[in-house]
Image (cartoon, rainbow, N blue to C red):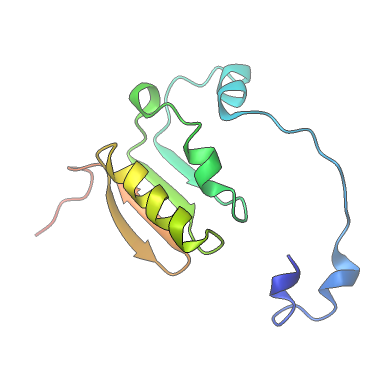
Length: 109
């Protein structure tokens, strides 16, 4: 968060440290009885690939997956791209995010 200090003056004064309980992606979808996911958007400040690896793509098969690659190290970015591509997605980078979509989702002229 402090890396944003160039854009947010006195950011240190705005931050609060708090311990939170974490759950896995599988626990989240079971807890809320999720049967289908059309759009998966992950923005977890550098933990995006860790979350994406928890998704059962055979079960859910979201048409669009968006994740923030900005905070991933270069090797993690490459691994995440490969991981998502190997599940049948086409990738486009837009700013700090990668947008992955299944073939046929976007019609091209």
